[in-house]
Image (cartoon, rainbow, N blue to C red; front, side, top):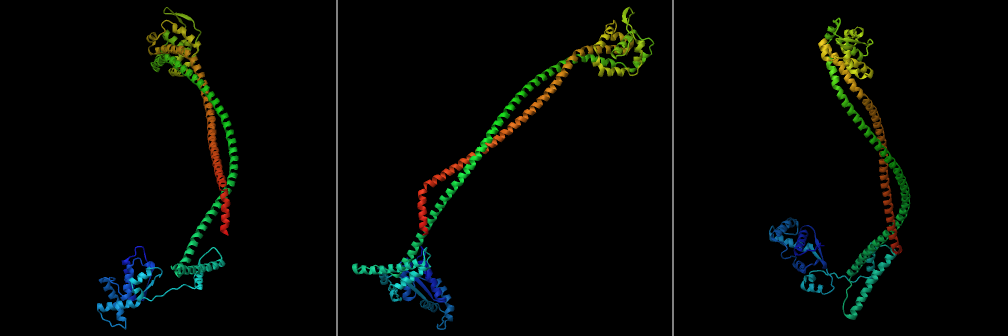
Length: 540
């Protein structure tokens, strides 16, 4: 049987027949089946008519194809005991055509209904003269039953065997009734209406095709209805679940709101405390700033006054540096040092808090001087080896311990006529530096006693400033702690607000979904009843 495609033409027909020529001649007998539907062009019948007439079709084999067919048939002819082998192309080709005539057969399945078959029979006489015609007459009732029974029995239907048997009888009755009505129509109107066994087979095929299509449509519709009912049922279940979830979420939301409100109140209290603490810290800061300004001012003033005493102190140090140990050795060799030297050592003894004789007055070179204590203490002081070091240490560490009384005791010496460095230098050389040292110490003390109260006030102010700074640091630490707590509460509030908002959004979304589902269920309430009835009907 040919496989006829949409573009099947003469070339494709020749290829198919040529292939069967070769197969029939060299291998096995072949039968080619043609139906009405296979005759795409009427010229096909002309080539079939030619083959039926003489076994050959003009133009079927080209020269090279003919040579190939001869080569294929050569071994077959050699083996044929009934053929006289002649290795000549004409002989081999004739043998090839004879083999095709004997072994290739055409079966034509044509309907006699209408004018087409009569026209073809006239145009292509070999269709009748060279063919054996088998006429298919109307089937008897039992044949109709057998054919439809075989088809319906194997055909899958949504019914039982009893109904299938009724359907088989109905199909046979319909076809029989059609034949009867066709005969009545012919008798009445002299016009033929043909209903052949092929029509019956087509009727059965059409029924099964329509049944399958309708069954699938109904089945698909039933699936859609059932799916719709399932979705409606599921929507109802979802609404119940969402209603429960919404109630739970509203409880959680209410609790979260209470927690947030309590947290807001706590934050308000903490914030007020923080603001109060911040105000206190600001007050302390202002106080510390004022104290710091006072201390800075006191430091500047004291520094200024001390700078005024600095030249006297430097002068005292330089005067001591001008004296050497040898100068004291020279002094010790003097049995009776000059009167000025004796008074200088008395003044030094006063600064060092060494004992002196009760002073009196005497005339020295026409001037009134205080009586000396050289023999009582001055000589011993001049004789001691570490006197110079004692004086230097005194100038470094003990100068600030000189009191008012000591200064008053020095005044009579400083007021004496000729008690100066120049006179002392003339009297005893470098030892005269002690005179300068005494004068410088007195100058320093007079300035230092002015600075001392300021230094004391500065010390007290510094202590107060230190305490104030400590208090400020403590207050700032407390403020930082309270601020940190407020920030932590604010962060917690932000987190709680976010959680509350999330719960509100979730609850609103759940409510919207529930309302939408309820709206859909209410809108489809009528359809639900109809779908339920249709679903029950489809099950029956």
